[in-house]
Amino acid sequence: MVFNFAAFSYIIALIADAFLIFFSLFHVIAFDELKTDYKNPIDQCNALNPLVLPEYIVHLIFNLLLVFSREWLPFLLNLPLILYHIHRYRTRPVMSSYMGIYDPTSIMNADQLTLCQREGWIKLAFYLISFFYYLYGYVMALERISLES
Image (cartoon, rainbow, N blue to C red; front, top):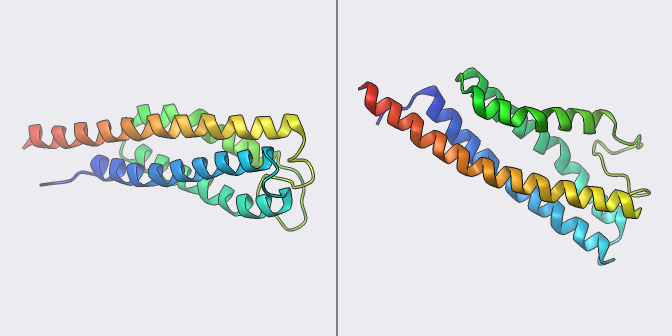
């Protein structure tokens, strides 16, 4: 079986999207634990903040692979989320030692907690839908290869 760069990009996107699904699921669970006072905000932010940059970088890298393989539709579908990630990181609260976006002092505000929880659910739904689209794109890329040979 011969692979082309588009099929390779979709395989990487599938694997990366599986990690992003786990990241967003972890975020949803973490914010639910905060909402029910199961964990304190400092420990939870210490657990969540190191995952923010890897999530954004992984999402950006596999979208760049899709651009380089000239798969424009998945990139255009992901572009609003990429721009949201850039905006969210640029407007993050100023903290002394954190590279993340969650501030332990403000995360327990009801509106901030609801926003973060809603963001986690929306990202989870988006990544799940994207996973099946990438699976479809991978199958179609393999079919294009078989039709060309």
